[in-house]
Length: 295
Image 1 (cartoon, helix red, strand yellow):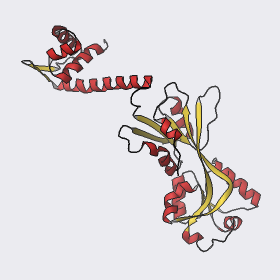
Image 2 (tube, rainbow, N blue to C red; image 1 turned 120 degrees about the vertical axis):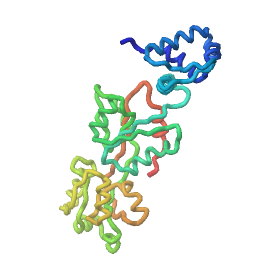
Image 3 (cartoon, rainbow, N blue to C red; image 1 turned 90 degrees about the vertical axis):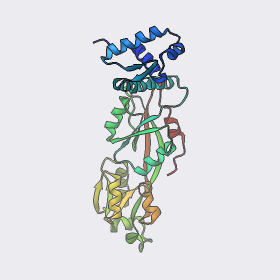
Image 4 (cartoon, helix red, strand yellow; image 1 turned 90 degrees about the horizontal axis):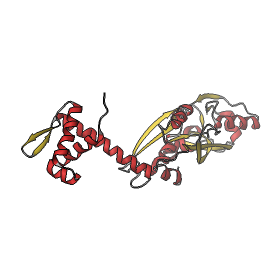
């Protein structure tokens, strides 16, 4: 099967938008007969007439309307390709973002805020494990990945980790649990309340284990949870005190549903944006990586 001749398609596209063969031939600086030949060749290739010829006027057939829709998409994509590779004109309109499934939604919203409300931008958001997301980044199906641990870099990878923020970690609980016990120090709270922790491979969990070892405490662990959203729900249900960055429960803290008790010394949660070294990076990344991340 022979390939589609895109010169024929472009001639058809021009005529379809103009609606007049003579005028289009003058615009393209070709003879009317030559233009007609090109369109007939395209019709023969597609196996359908594209125009109904009514006197001097051309009207699209059903097949012609379908062909025009595809031609619009094809030539629009071609213009976007030129703009992107020349890095001139308007920026690419699609940004594909991957985020660790357990990452704070509040952090993600704060990071993407510069693009919200822009009519020329389409955000494609995906979640998954770190390995899945980094593989998609290498395959160029994602432009950026949001994680809480920087990936290793070696000669075989071209990851660039942008450290965006470092958040403190605190004990978070309900006002009912903490309201009458504000004078408790950190050691007392860790001894007297059940604790909700992130899972074992979390840097926060590692830091917490080191902290309680230094204090000589064996806290009651009521749950180890992978998903930050689930930790927030468990804290709201007063299952225990959650070991969380306050950004994760910002709305609950602002409304008073939850209360921040003690900051945990030496424990922080880091947030990274990971990109790849590319010759033609997505220009929508710049406003995200350079704005002040207010959380």
